[in-house]
Amino acid sequence: MDRLGQFLEHKSLVFGIAYRMTGSVNDAEDIVQESYLRWEKSGSDEIRSPRAFLSTIATRLSLDTLRKVKNKRETYIGPWLPEPIPTSPEIEEPDPETLDLAFLHLLEKLNPIERAVFILRESFDMDYSLISEAVEKSQENCRQILKRAKDSLKFGRKKFTPDKETKRKLLHNFLLASSKGEPELLLPFLKEEIVVWSDGGGKVHAARIPIFGRKRAASFLIRTSKNAFFKESEVELYFTECNGAESVLVYRKNKPVYLRSFIIDENGISSIYSVLNEEKMKAFENKSELLERKVILPLEFFLLFPKGSARNPTPPLWTKPLLKIVHWAILRKK
Image 1 (tube, rainbow, N blue to C red):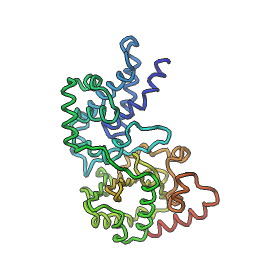
Image 2 (cartoon, helix red, strand yellow):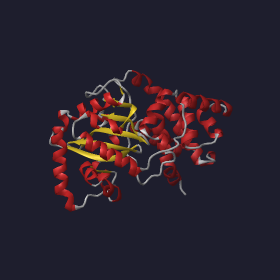
Image 3 (tube, helix red, strand yellow):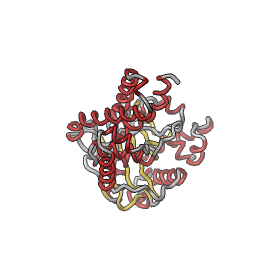
Image 4 (tube, rainbow, N blue to C red):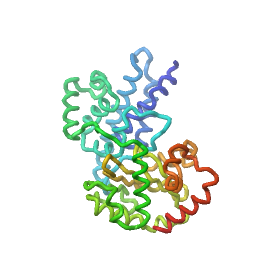
């Protein structure tokens, strides 16, 4: 295999490390580009393992990026949330649990070195010898860093995660209840300790503090769903999977402007992440491509045929009149 082929074979690994480290699609793509340039400049005789070499480059570039954006994130207006990405059906993620928005948001508690050690070990199951080289710490030190990171996160693998059908059914029923505009109808779907996060980046109106508790969350969700924004004629709503979680995506004039992602466990919706900062929606910009790849589908189709939409995400032609009626009903309810 030629050098380009070797890089392409490990490109998703480089992006996966960079994205989990930075929480930014733009930064991750820049790191992939810079990794390729350094890969091309390196001599083939000095590379024993392309995977180890590229993982080290991606980790060090990510650490540099985190140091550069530190001040920017500390002065960010309101909660800073990671940039969402669509879950690609073509790519099998090595560790989906550490890809979801809730977990990436939690990783912000760690310093950059702790984050790097944790991700390399827990997400990509890398040997301590490789981790040691990537972060320039001894192997024993890396073991201690990982322990501290786990203690800080109180990290433990989930014992039970609902299957996709169960989660889609819950979200389907939740959205139908939401359309009636009564907060109390949402309570059965929300966990008592639910937290709702909103990221507007100071560019659009959004809650600047998290909303705790299901009664406050239910009132907030109904209140924001009545925003005049949803009454605009050029608004389109889609169902998608974002970072492995069931989500609702909004386009206005074919631009992604709003995403609400639902973290669901066996007892209901445990947290909701809303991204309104358009600068963080880059991964959803090419709507036609996402539709073609069946990554997104009209929300109306999901509401009408939740099981059918899972088996065949492309709405049949005969459903179009029904979809128009449901779309009108959704916006009218707002």
